[in-house]
Length: 613
Image (cartoon, rainbow, N blue to C red; front, side, top):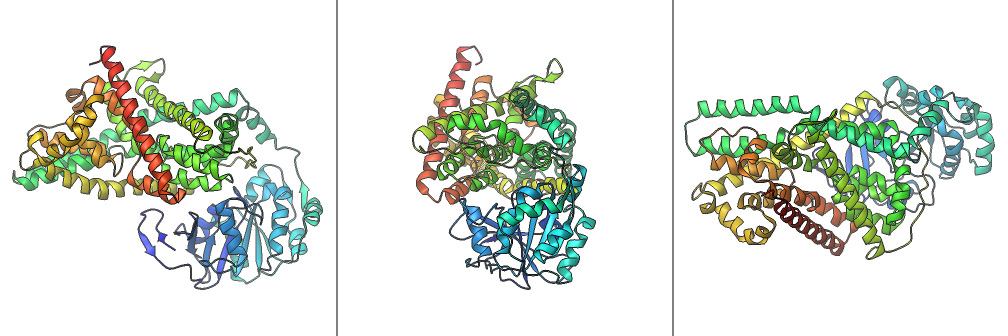
């Protein structure tokens, strides 16, 4: 099993989980807070490994602050008769049929305390496995908030195992669970049939509101067929306004820091090739990308809030009718929405879809969603060619960004519709999903997620973009820094005739090639191109440079290209892994390139016709 660090993507160990110490498996239904509990028990340090033969990942960590033990976080399941790939892996591990993960020595069965009546039959299924078990009644604080009162001792007596109320994000909320683990209190549970589970629930639940008033009041708006859709669109609108408005000041700080760093280097180094490499290659290339870190953080802040609060599942229900019209169901909305952060986790999230044709279609259209790597490209072009004026209380730049995201959704839906009517034709399934209770996002979990995404972005800036900037600087500087006489210019001129009909200049073509490594690299490449060309001048922000160097028609064509063009090489590699098919991967790459070329050409010639040359 290939084990990767979830933050750096570096290989950690090629071996399978060896079960050093007892193996403790966390198992439970989706949305029961299992992953949060895993982070708490392991201190947030985990290894991620691909299960061989399928594209399902398992998380492994060491128990923190307790006896030596290996914690394995299994994919969520609702029963022992799985239909999806991730659920099949979980069942294989539980039944001892896995060749990678040994059968657990201890199960921690994690269920939502507020959903005990519905999830207790799942506990009954686990009792038949004959594995020592502890039951975690998780999110106990939220159940009490909603007016639910339970008697865990009744369930403990019936099963003969510890039943522990837990609040996963807090150390105090995990203390009783840790005591049960350290004290060796786990035991093989008594069998519990489905019928007995239903009767037992009446004894355990002392008080149960018919429907939580808070949830009912919020859902009456959130799930309304009209107001709910308007709310969803409003949330997206606010997010993209915030991406511009909130990020402006910290972006200016970073830009000033990059400029001061360049000036400091120029002051201490002699005027030679090495100074040019550092200033025009590395600082100009990497600096033109890291300036967008505040926007990345703001975007992920909102996405994590939506996930942690329980709203994301409601958004899936709202999207179900639209998804059905495309041949998908609402569950596909969550992987597609995840793709707005990055297409890679979006493609991986499609594993939860039971229908294989739904899963394939979702993977094929995920790259059309506007991932965070597009933000630098969009921002620099919008900043260059869209005036920072107001339409009422809203900024025009945020409105354009919102329009680009909406366009991605519309075209993604259209492409999904065409695919489901043609190459991925097949039956559809209606959405069945248990809505989680509303939760207050935990600050530690939120900042851990933001920190991980920031590290990934900065790591790419320090590796991929750094490397590309150095190579591109050399290709642009030799044998002459006149662009058409440089190595980069000569290589770009080979592709230039292909892109000339859609208005791309040589500088654009040069930026496209390294942009395949990662989308944001295109901005760094442009920064290096213009830094080398204007080595004796202070360039200022990239938006100002492009406003003076480009005209409107090619700029809009370049923007249209990035709405559709295939994403980074990593995304293509993950598509190959997730589909397990070179044919489908090539199909995805070719149709995306074709759409990008057509869209850029239409945009260019339409702008010319309207006088925007």
